[in-house]
Each structure stands twice: as structure tokens, then as C-alpha cells.
Image (cartoon, rainbow, N blue to C red; front, top):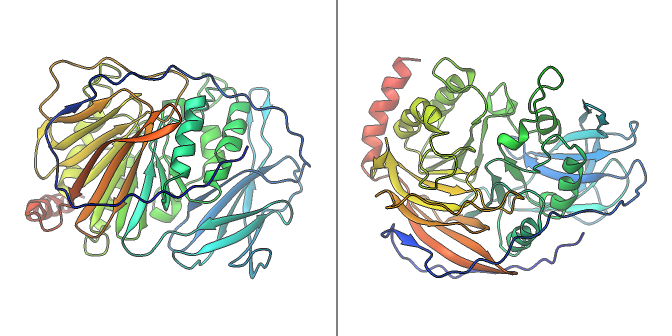
Length: 438
């Protein structure tokens, strides 16, 4: 499957900040699209398949791929010129069984140190196709593509095509990847579907409910997800692939687990508190958080599901001065004002629900009326978002609706960081209190 590469530059004009509540009025949504089916494509058993990359600590990248040949080596050759590899890295491999399914050999190899903002050419396993990747920049500006709840439908393909047209550095995915739902071959077809994009830019993901795949007495949860999508949890001091953090340019990004324990006595809570205490806002002036189940949601779908996690963890994020929170789960788009404790707060985070990547379950059309005072824009359409961190104080967010085969910018806003806002003083007092209770 080939994706047409187009780069579309959007001129940015300085507009500031969050306006009033906006709704899509007379927009008529295109009809649903069918689940994609992939023809059988026989490849040599040692041929790398389902290639994707992810960040793996400072100046390093993890390359992941699958082979059907159990003896295929977990090596990656790479360099800055086509077919001229100046370095080679040896990695590790794993495999798993799920009911009657047995995976291929899953390779994870970390390459680096790599130069910032540089194109590298690489080959997996010593044979097969050459791929190329681009490392993120070390300084502003930096751009993120954001889309959750992808699945494998015609709308997923449309979303990926539109992401392919934007000039971005890292893809952020707040859960629900393949919608395999225990049918393991769907993980394989998802890997095939996203390979053209995921092999060229790092994909940083967290889990959703469709990654659980637990079967009572038979299979533990998240086996497929953890085996296939290894994230830099160890590099960030976490003991679980379900929550971790990483830095890109001047942005500290925290990926939390809506389906890992999160109460005040949990490992995830302790890790989050420790991670936040280590954040240096002079080095990373932006603090962005992703998880699956939204805390602020005026759609009637999945009401209240994030309340317990919110009660436990929102005070930590507020004290640390989190700027943006991205979630999925609800199959629609919504953006809030800065909020905390259920109401508008100039020192809280902007929450964006973006569970509209193209999943097979369809859109969530029903909203609460009247809308809460904190809801700025909401619409039940498939699409993706683009977040451009322009500098240490200003970011430009835009949401692009899938309108048939076109990407239509339907919501946009300039966001100012909490650095220098006066909220830092309040946050520093709160963080000192948290440190004392650690």
C-alpha cells in the first residue's frame, strides 16, 4: 500500500487565545466507510514487515519490525546516505502466542546516537527494503500530528493520508490503535497499514480499552500491545509500558495509562509524581499529557468513565502546570478552555478529545445540552490534529476534519504556555507540598 507524499505549509498569523463556544452547524457528514481488507501478500520469511519507529531516550530511536523467520537477526544498519550505512545496532526480539495465534519474531533495536533534525536511511535484518526516517529537532519549532482511535477503515486511510500531507516531526496517539479486539491478524494488518508513516516518523502511543484483549483464565491483558509497541518506559524510569514520558525539543510529554492502576497507592501515581518533580520548565517550557479516557467530555458517550483517574491525578498535573491534555475514547472532537476541578481555571490545562481517527464503531453524535461553560468547540467528525510549538510561549493548534477526501481545517487556536503566566508561583507551592509528601 503506497501513500502519496505531499507537504502542505500553512501560514501562521498571530491570533490569541481561546474564543467562545463554537459548534458545527449545518455540516453534513459523509457516510461511513467499510473496514479495510488486505489481500494476502506472500513475502520471504526473513523480509521485514510492519516497520515502525519510536523515540528511545535522548538522541536514540527504536526500530521495530516483524519477520516470519525465527532466525532473522535483530540488526539495523543505518546512515545519512542511501545504501551507505555507517553504523549498525544489535537489538532484541520477542514473540507471543494468543489462543491459537502465534506471532512472528518481533524485533526491537535501538539506534543512535543520532543527529537532530536529520534524515537517516536504514535497513532491518540485513536485507529487504531501505527505509528512511527523520529525527525531531532539538529546538523550537516542533510539530506533532495527533490522532486517536484509528482502527482500519476507509476513514482511517483518509486520516493517514491527511497526516501524510502535513509537515510533522512526531505522531502522538492517545490509545486504541488496531481495533484487533482479540483477532490477532488485525494487529498484522494494522502494522501493514501504518508502516508508510510509522517507519518515517516516530509514533508515540499509549493504550486504550481496545488494547486490553484479556480473556479470563486464558490470556492476560495487553500482551499483543506490549509485545508489538514497545515505548521508552524504562528510559523514563517507569516499570510499565503502559505509562512513560519523553522529551522532544522544549516539550516534556507524559503518556499515562487509563487502564493501569492510578490511585494514590499505585505504581503509576508514584511514577507520575516523581516524573513531574524532575521536569525543568526552563529546559522544557511546555508540559503535554496524553491518556485514553477523557476527564472533560460533554458528549453523552463514556460519561463519567474518567472521573476516578481525574480525582487522583488531576491535582498533580495542575500543580505541575500542565498546558495541554489529549485524550481519545469518545469518537468525536472537543476542545475546552483551561480547566481544573470541573470548571474554567486560567491555570488549568486545555483538554482536547480527539478519538476520531477513523474507527469501525462510528462517531458519537449525541452531546449534552446546553454545553458546559468550559466547552469551546465540539463536533462529531473524523479527523486529526496538528500541534505546532512555535516557541517557548506560543503554540498553534488546528483540527482538520475529514471532508470526503479533503482535509478541512475546522478548529484552530493559538495557545500560550503557563510559563510566565503567574500560575507558576501557585504551581511551585503545590509541587513543594507534593515533594514533602513523597
